Image 1: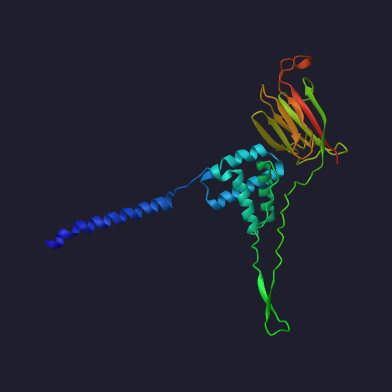
Image 2: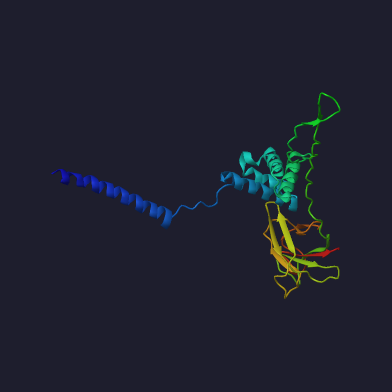
Length: 274
């Protein structure tokens, strides 16, 4: 009688154990939880620091402070200017990659609006008393201080200047050659030869797009195009430091010539100066 009454407890224990094993197998092996599209503020401390370094390096390349502030805002309190400065100082003290320290220092400088000098932490050496024997019955101790190291300020990296690009032509096309509603971009060298693999940036009030020349070599090695949207004004420039900007570009319908009522096309030609 006693043996029979113990079987329900054994069965209950085995059922619970089997349920745990099956649950762990399904949740860990078959359908593990996957976290995607996590916000930067939810990252681990080490990953947040890496994110700050990436923001600083991006700023040293494009100089776009509003975009850097927008990215920092995603980190909440860890994206404040003081947090950037503190991280740069700590990285300098730990002897981290000078490029990372320099990028953080440049970003902290821009956020604070004044020069921020990041100096590695140097621990002051205590003075050491050294015994100096003198011809006397009583020895005299002379304190000789050890000279302190002078902190070296880490320079802020400056983006390497690139060849200047000038705007040769920006014209509206209402008839003849051209693609209605498109921006036709040509990038040339000093001799007028098309240059492939050159980044083009088209921006408007609410966004920006980037693409490269050379994808349609049958037209021209330095050619690229962009489809405009009605009622939007665009700016075009080569994605290099020193490029002039073609502005006031839109697909407003032509009202004269052979293309009346047809969306205008624009031909924009850039040429490298150096």
